[in-house]
Image (cartoon, rainbow, N blue to C red; front, side):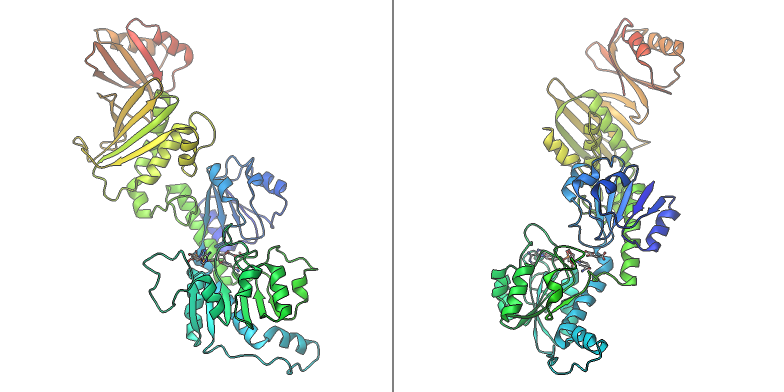
Amino acid sequence: MKVLACDGIHEDGLALFRDAGWEVVVSDPIKDTAVLAQALVGVDAVLVRSATKVPAEALAEASQLRVIGRAGAGVDTIDVEAATERGIAVMNAPDGNTLAAAEHAISLLFALARHIPRADAGMKAGEWPKAGLTGFELEGKKLGVIGLGRIGGTVARKAQGIGMEVAAHDPFLPASAAGKGSVPLKTLDELLAWADVVTLHIPRTKETTNLLSETSMRGMKKGAYLINAARGGLVDEAALLQLIEEGHIAGAALDTFVTEPLPADSALRANAKLILTPHLGASTSEAQQAVSTILARQIIDFVATGAVAGCVNLPPLTAEAARESGPWMPLMSSLGRLAARLVPAPTRLEITYAGRTDALDTRPLTRLLVAALLGTASGRVTPVNALQEAAARGLTVAETLGGDGDGFDRLLKLRVVGEKRTREIEATLHRGPRVVRLDGVEIEFDPQAHVLLLRNEDRPGMIGAVGSQLGAAGVNIVNFALGAAGDGQARAAITVDRPVNEQQLALLRATPGILSLAQV
Ligand SMILES: NC(=O)C1=CN([C@@H]2O[C@H](COP(=O)(O)OP(=O)(O)OC[C@H]3O[C@@H](n4cnc5c(N)ncnc54)[C@H](O)[C@@H]3O)[C@@H](O)[C@H]2O)C=CC1
Ligand SMILES: O=C(O)CCC(=O)C(=O)O
């Protein structure tokens, strides 16, 4: 396994990769997409902060890439949709830098209130710049928090600690959280008209881009301040400058910008009422150590065990649930391949998880099955893009939970419908992974092994005929399972110790009494 670590990822996370046997390649930020595309060839995971952007074009040749890891919170610099289409997991570590980002916002709050940067710059320039730098006290002032998530919630708590009155706007808070606690919620317009200082803590998405447009900022209280330590592009920078020049907004502190690094000639740099920091929100040693180790653990576990944490394009799977589902995973993949062999162009897949289903998270299992079923035909299909691919290829996937396990603790039943035929497979993990029934006929085999599936006339001598053909070809029979279909025909699943070549298969097919034969 090979991980490419761009953008100065903290060494502690890289050490975890090395300890787990990964090769670690460290790189400066890669800003040229074509160079990044080349660097991603032969790489299993890539780690980035905000400097290395990962657009769709960078993924074009990355056939081995399984995970894009964002050592931080915001994934707006990664084309998540393109990654999902290509079956690549995108992970982040938002809990690691919450405190750092919140403390930076609070630092900017104090810096704005007391003109710290201007005072410092004047002092360094040999002045005594006391006049004109009278500030205001924060206690009793109103702080409007846009986005009451991890960082916004922490900022709210800290601001209350210094005596500020805090309210928030967050239309997506879970019902369980909304209205609870001591931070009242307001509409955006209400919050902007109410607050002395507005601070942003939301991700940048299509919906939030330019949330603070000229119109909405005109709705802010005259003389109010603005802090954006969340993302460039949430605030219309030109409109902000204009409103500061008009005196409608008294000042602002920006840590994040539409273009990063901020161009040397940006008009923002020339405005004395703006405090600017170079995207420093997460730049504490504690936060960098935390995001790199959290991310490393997530990626190593994901690749090694299938456990999913901190993934923005796969449902989470706890270690406990992974333990429960884990033993099923290899079976799901081989059943998917078996189903693809039996029904080459399926239009409908019905999956029944029968028997005991408590503590079984079926989502990763279904995704694995569908990925193997579709991936056999073409393209790169992984659990990440399996359901999208199914929809795109016209395969309906229906899942049922519960029902009779037919004496098994857990029994998986598959019905694979194609245009010409429908096949049914039942499998279990009981006494090892195995198929226990094929098209209603009791027949046992391990779908992870090399198996010849046979339909033959139900008459004496068939086992001997097939056995001697295989023996003559030097193929060893590991197991020979037979089941009578009750229609004058029999089914056999012959487990062999190696794949049987085409010539040998043709000879077998030509054996009198053999009606069909497939190697899976
Ligand atoms: N300056 C820096 O170095 C850092 C910046 N960030 C930025 O901060 C953002 C927030 O991070 P977290 O708090 O960890 O995320 P989070 O997901 O915990 O919280 C985001 C909150 O914003 C809310 N939200 C989404 N759209 C909204 C809208 N239109 N109006 C109001 N609320 C909305 C969500 O409901 C959620 O509660 C990140 O997405 C990232 O862009 C994060 C870390 C460091
Ligand atoms: O890695 C960084 O310095 C920026 C962190 C950030 O913006 C984020 O986590 O969203």
